[in-house]
Image (cartoon, rainbow, N blue to C red; front, side, top):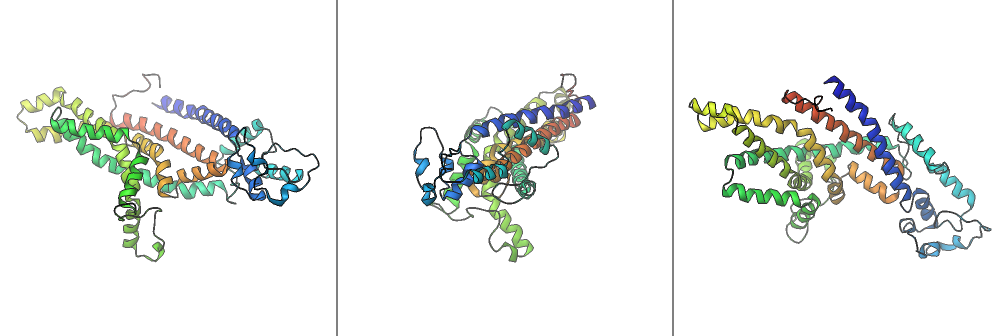
Length: 370
């Protein structure tokens, strides 16, 4: 088992490297980098840096103000919107955001810094990126844990009921509900919940955005807890609806597999009641694989739903931070969030495999070649 763990830990390194190579290449070709964002702000036209696509000519002159008339004496910049700015200023901006170096040098410098979790400073927030990540990460993890917990609280009894009533009308109708939950993305459920319950066209029962109310600091401890639960009700509900389906199917199949085992037949032959067999023998064995899958379910719910849910409900988590950084082309924050999400996902996947082995010693990853 130790050799398997070592192989997986070693494999994390090239996996992270490959992820960063792909993301770095994609971001480099994306229009409107941080240099152009700063230039656009100087020129008074922040929209220009986000509409830099081939064939467009409006970005050259529109909205640049009086500075566009300043002569640069033949200076031609590679950045759209830089007309009218002194070359020295453009060079200073490049140096400030690290774009004065070749892309390959920037990449390896970034990887070297990331090995020590040195993410640098945000281009536009005037703060260390690691501070932003530490501030936002607990929000994403908390929402993900709440969603995973409630998904299990729904999936386990529902999967058990479906297994006991396998083939009945109850099983058929609940299977249709499970299919709908699996087919529709959680962000669509989030939008529907907002329309219905957060000041849309129907009821205004829940807040539209944020994790706490404006007067949260003045509330008592009990009121703070109630206020927090009130704010996360809709986001967690949307994530649970989008994430309970696979857990329900896993629970049902696990129970059906155990019900067919020889020890169940033996227990029934001894005269044990159906409930004693189900809850005293089948439940314990069937739940091993379900409980062991908790870390994997957490990763699936967190990565599959957190980004869109945080954006829709304006939750100050890591997903919203990455989205805002993408809009402003804040590369330092973009790569930091990608790095943290990737590392977190790989580590939790390893924890999931180890949990399976702990709850079921019959599983041998080494025999499968890791």
